[in-house]
Image (cartoon, rainbow, N blue to C red):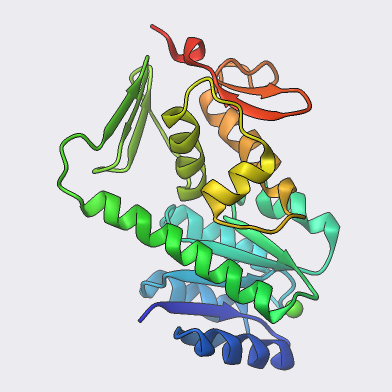
Length: 237
Ligand code: CA
């Protein structure tokens, strides 16, 4: 049974989330404060952490940052109440995998949680798989599913699981252009619109890690009016 840690100080919302996540077969633990949540998140393994930004005391942003420092691969879905929080939540510093803005529908909550869990499992299955061909090499870029390591020009990159998935997807289809909604559906597993901003933010984060100059990207290129593509030449030896 998948387990999920829900961190939310508003009891009504927490009850609603618990009810709807238990309905889809998840084991739910709930904490009200960031301090309690952090302690639990570091001591236990959760398949997903659902984290409200606005909490009394330690904020969800601080919890996210500290969990990420210790467990870079932990899947984290943030709940925000203000649009102004979205950039910070998805930004390079925090790197949440995704966000939902309040108010949200319970069906959307279930769909989001399901797809994040699916991706987390896909990733851990790939890591466990003994297939020797589970290594993708394009020019100077090497992505190793077994060890979950990404090496660019001899240097190991420190990617979150979403950045890893995104890079793997793009690098597996070099020179192919993908729209934001195609990436949302293939990498995030979403089939509804409105969250294209998630894609932009993750592309920016990825560029900060892979490009020599993120303002002038050579590897993950923008195709104006269409989307993004992985450019082989950017990683050529
Ligand atoms: Ca709150």
